Image 1 (cartoon, rainbow, N blue to C red):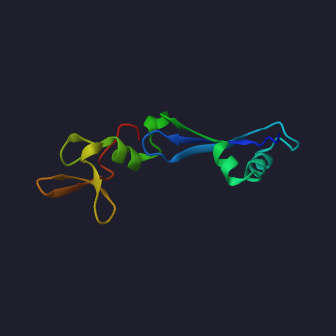
Image 2 (cartoon, rainbow, N blue to C red; image 1 turned 135 degrees about the vertical axis):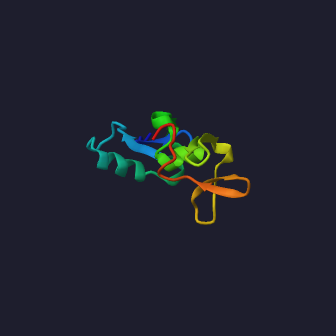
Image 3 (tube, one colour; image 1 turned 60 degrees about the horizontal axis):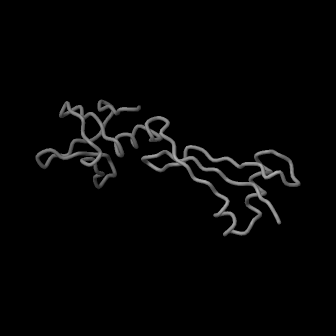
Length: 118
């Protein structure tokens, strides 16, 4: 039976962006370095690679990777409204900016707005 190193991916819980990835040593006939572990993992057939990849999530930094993801997936305190806007009411406009709408007017997430984690 042949063994290969295992890939471990940690993703942020809410935005699903990758926080980190690493390779766990299989004990095989190669050096235990990050490069050798990655090469060992890559040298197995695609189906086995997929099966030997473990994905978990983290709540580190509130489960988001950055300020924009914090606003998009958790919500933000709007500097115009002076209130917290839940993520269900946050969307993106045609310019891909984060907004919420009040009386047909877009309030854009800006540097004066703040989030829970960043």
